[in-house]
Length: 437
Ligand code: XUL
Ligand code: CO
Image (tube, rainbow, N blue to C red; front, side, top):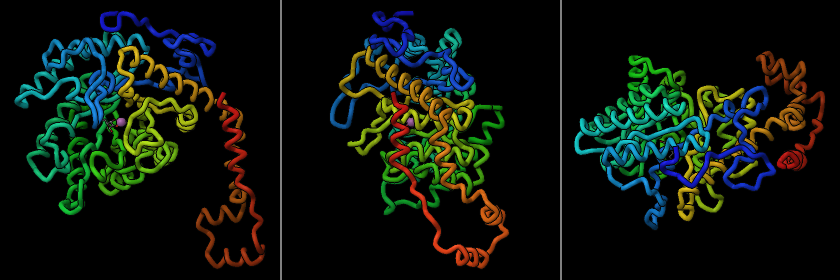
């Protein structure tokens, strides 16, 4: 299969001594780490919207991406060529999974019926290609933010008619995901937020969003879709505030509307940093609540305060992410989706390969290093040791609720000033760095 990238071979694993940029130096799909293959740990997915539909334009300039297979039209032939190019790419890259937005595979037509007909055709092509090549849909989603009708949001729109459009669109996108055997479906609150509170009834919009999600849960049950439902936290952009701001906000929302059993979270690095959290903070917050489901593997740029969706090339970050994933014993049906785009200057088709190789090798290396840190145990032991005073009779009686403020006051006055210990932050950071080689 070399119709679209004729000069680029399938990417081989060549090991860490290789200097061939079109090879994996770390991602060895069948290599076993902590009893599981890299392929199963990482469950890499490629995002159709970035890889096939992102022309690399930015707010100041037009697209630069060279895509000889794409004539820019919405013809079914062009739709098919894009999908074929996508699957040739997945095949050559040994990427097992993919993610898509409905409107990116099948652009909107003049009427809803025509739009749905084109979507069905596109889904038929996706199905053929994924089955031929043994690829799997990690998750599907609906683009509820591009069309002008969604200017004031979709589920949170001021217009009940827009809510109806969004509901129909999501129904079809869930159908498409279900038909393709998708392991999940993502709800991303693209415009589910506000531009200004001067014209917004926030409690009302949040209740609308909850109702929308309840209807989707009801629909999922009726059609027997067994993939996970995910919410993808993001604090802002293009809105000034999104209702799924961060993990803590999503957990509160899901608890408030009794939806916690129905949703997990798909957590994205650049959204975490946009919310002024680290990715590790967001992952640990979700894992502690049992809702860490899947990851959008990208990164932001430290000097740019927006969602730049850089390919993840930060090794220390990948180690931190994979350590949480290993502690969780994997993401189950979830995976690592490269919700990442090339820089505007990396416009040649081969840059798609370089970008994904960089991301996959970074995470494969992150996985190996995280496993080494876990088996070494010094960092985990240091954390455990900091709390060892709680492994005591007093600690137990506080935790089990058998102790009052007066009891503790008596204890404090008996023992006098507690002896405090250093947190050894710099020493531990230095040990962490020792593993990054
Ligand atoms: C957008 C983003 C995408 C969407 C998918 O900021 O991160 O993954 O969430 O719909
Ligand atoms: Co994302």
